[in-house]
Image (cartoon, rainbow, N blue to C red):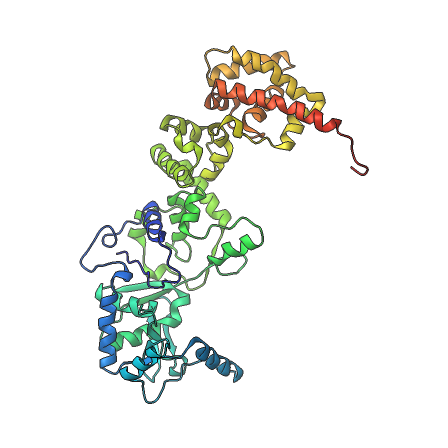
Length: 472
């Protein structure tokens, strides 16, 4: 069952839900009930369940199990600072007597924020955890937490406890960072007369440097001027990973099948999974291992499946190659066999699908391949323009044969023929096999790019004629 927990309106992003649904389906995680599917316990967006939450709030208030509070943020901060100065953990000081509905109404009239807090029991609460065993929090570690915020929206804690009960959730598996929240949830379940589900708190995922893996890693990388790492599912999808590889990798983070199995499908995981196989220690997200998994999966999935995933990658990234037909995309995948991610495929062959005048020439490639040795590469391009213009038919095989013939006349060095051509059509020194590359680009595109590359010679000569300043 899929539930959309969207009660934190400060962090709500309007199109994020559709992105979540799409990414889950991409992973192969289809839900039996929830958004776009329906079910007996909807609605499945918490933002559509406010009336349900208010009913339970009213009941808790009427039974004296919850109460109003109306401190301002500044007042709460002052209380926290006082606790910090006394070297004590902050615990919300329960008012005595408890505020009444009339008090709350007066506070609202004064413009104060009115919330509802749970009246916590004055006793220790033990979490029976299927992974960690019994975990007990003493009463002095638990305070009266907020159930309903001043804006009328429920907190995560309250909404989840209510929904878990009403939606008949039997097991709650979540990260160990939520462990300290669970005693509060148990207290709320007791106050509402709900059955406590089975809990299992999972190992937290860490980066290889020992830091906790977090969405903030992307923000930190951007501030340092670095390429942000993939963190969310959509990041891996748009980076060109296969869902089979990502699921395989994630499945084995913190869980073991009991043997040395490395490759496992979702169906096999469902058959073999048990909570007993989950470890207690934190897992490390080894990106090099994920890359190895992805390389293996890309080589083993069926061709039709690989094509479908490649088309999804191109669509998600709005890549020019997305306009190519299936036959062309199959050819590209074959030419790039052994790739690590779809991003590698696009980097290697994407140039063939952009406008001819959009090719950006790598300065080092131009100098090394075209301008070096008194412009030998430029001279080779001039020779090839006429021969390729007359070549028929235009195919990978015909191109290869023609280039080999030219190479024989140039001392047998195919590289001296193919590399200038590769730089001219791709802008750099990396592409699929040269014959297939030219077939992808087409005769007219190839000739236009070659002539454009030849224009660089004039630019280079102009630059070299400019007087050099002292010290240059």
